[in-house]
Image (tube, rainbow, N blue to C red; front, side):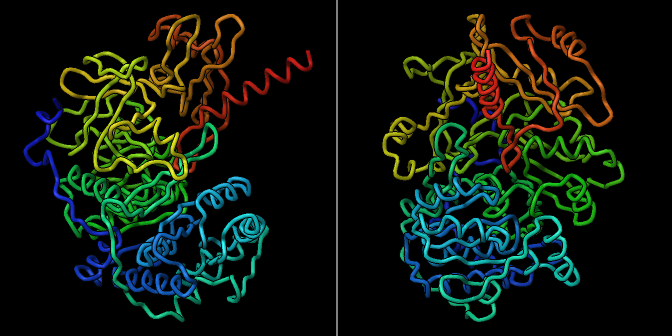
Length: 563
């Protein structure tokens, strides 16, 4: 029984046909269908689909000369840039598996991921080269391909940028194109583009090893096949049924090394022949200027991105009216942020839901033609099944009852790389147990109340941080907030709110407490407030609640030692 299917408008198919072809084939198709159309706009530099296709084939050809074979892993450690896109498709054209690596990784994190994945080569930025070389001896890495941001900047930015980089990082890295060190620029000028046919199993062949954030324990390599990624991008296209193939512009501010940015910008963009406007990192002012000037129509993002834009002091100077549709992911979207963004742009912003393990989207609210329920993650996407199960015995629960969200569909991963036990715990009879607590209403709309591991148990009460965060976001002085359970001798845990105020605003703990008590039962009201200039976040903008809890525990341990 799937009550949500009754909600689907006629223009949205309940089941989809999937082209059984590998991810890179869509770039081949786009180069044939839109050869002279702009594929990438990057800080003034543009590449057509023909140029992107040929550059990706050059990378594939070169990788083969390095003895990269089908099934080998090749890592990408790059910010959003033409090189990141060329590398991604080049690796796939070579028949290899992409290992996306966060450029912010420390040596320890980088070494772990390279050892775990067994990557044979890595493509990285020049300023990351010293970090890579420090760990290479402890890994199976045989080759390092180096590029610089300036390689794909237009004149005069390409001349000025190295001076800015030296000022900001203090690094001037010089790498020669010899031995196991290779220059991206040299590869592009010296290598001929050639597409070599490869045998592919659409259902089983891996396209990607995507590592989870690793907020608890070591990150896990999520195995995603060509089918997983194509199924999710196809469903994303179906959900955006008013968008026109070959005509839209998509803003790529979400990191492409994160599965959400990869699916909703990189794969969907190429699949539909869209222009991808790439920004190497999120900066509110740069993003506003880019929207004003480049006029993107699609803007997938995360709540912290939309919050950053809405709270920019000069937002009214910019015309944001080109934005037509946005799906927010990676974290809960506060209702107040959604309403302000829609008012500023005239476009639609809805909340979606997913995980790295689901390529990543499973649910979203309707953008058009149907009721959009505030506070809900919406309904399952086509061909996706979902249910709420008891955390005690795994039995399905009735509408309105809170339990763990389980999902099933063509986008669900094959398992965790080299982790059979963890795979068995998470995947059962095709169902992925998400670790998120939620419920479904009578109509079929789903709601997340919190991560199972983030639920606070204080004085015997189950308290969900998201509910408290939603209330505090409504306070006019609050820009960002995260709520966590911190150790408490008497109650077991107590509720603490970490708050970032809007620029120029001033509010006291007492004032926030009075505000919270008007909207929450007494046991849910935070007992402690801590004001901060910023909150710890992942590269995609997800607030790291666990980091704050760990910090709190370290403080307590220190106090006990001193006491």
